Length: 401
Length: 223
Image (cartoon, rainbow over all chains, first blue to last red; front, side, top):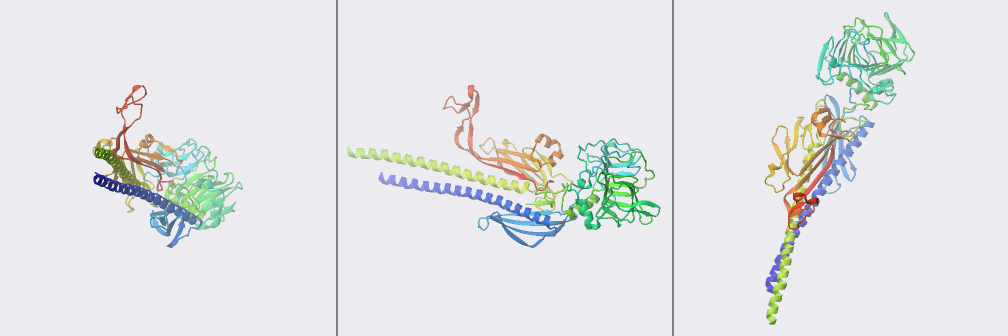
């Protein structure tokens, strides 16, 4: 009996020991997995934090590059990073690669590779551009009998991409096409309508309620702090120009022309007028582009003609965003959009004989114009065309993690 | 007489010792099984979470700005576009659940499969879950409700983060005891009745479980 009991006890102890080892192994495995997952999450945090830091550096210095790579101890881990140029989406991008390890130094580290593509200086269509022609006032007389098309045009004037444009006209009042303009556009439902007269109501946005948000300055159009566009214009970047109450010059038979400008226009051309005089714009060369702003402090700058000099220009084409307070007699072609700030646009006069000019909405032309403002100012304004990492000064086009 | 007493005493003491050892071994075996089950479930939860996070953090990656990133979203299924393997080819990814009849091999009556489908490829079962919930938030952190998400692409385009919650449970109950959720009138009866004698049916069996919950912020949808 004594021996049997002893054998039983030994057997039981053996079974107990085996079971105990199994339990301990399971507990160890559980701990290891939790530990591994915890480390993985931290490695991701280290990678994301490093990218934030590098985006901030890029915001300070647009030309900041790190190639070959470098490393930084961060949050108990290690982040190895590299910043290089690359191309994508038809534009230059900055590739930020981060390889993060956590914990470091440790043999139990986990790694996280994250790649972010920053798109500094990315252009965008400001949200206030709701039509090929946008105003917070009556546009019946201002649009004259031009061709106005809110469908999205590329530089070769093709509709590209289709169904991605805006209404032809967007106004906060009733709209009557008094001079039989041919108007087309893209409805807010995303359907293209070719230019016709009478126009399809789907591509006319009338009585739009801005709810008091309509911009009263050019900076507000882009969501910039006041004075930003003036600073850009004064900087001369990309051919930008600034003139304040410019001299009125005479060119041929054309009088009261905005003087002191160099053509072709590019970058940001800011013409500030608050002397109460009626000016005319008279393009002197082809290939005018960017943002053309004619504005006074109380939205009272008046352009009574926007034309081109046929003796020096072939087409009078402007590509980009035309921003005026009050303007009338638009005898040029515009690829991009027109936005007028004044609440009092032309309501009496008619502009006839303008059937050979057009305004075609083009997101590409507008984005090229705003790309300059973004790049020069390092501000994203009201640009929402970026991804990842919240609202930073440097738009991020995509993130792979 | 003394010999007889020794034999009887030995049997009694030996029997007690043997009973103790058998009980100890049963307990150890049960604990060992539960620990193994628990480890297995944790491993499953971690593995599934890694798969989900791998995919969900890439929602919208390389998708053209004019195209939708999230094509369908409700509380238990999600269809989205992403260049998951970074090859410049955008795939359509689907996550959806089956029903409890597809898990007849499991004694757990509440589990159902969670499926993943990449591109036009085959549907693969990731694991069985007893609960899965996707909750969607916009940029302000406000919840987007499934009823709106079902009918409006604009609503789906507004998704900025997703709270993923799932529970994996063991195929077999950890014990045959039933969890009592009401007042039992008869301790011997496993029927559970609520206050006022309402029959609640048989109590729920207890299963080992591991739960995962995380809010995943999407980095490739527009801010």
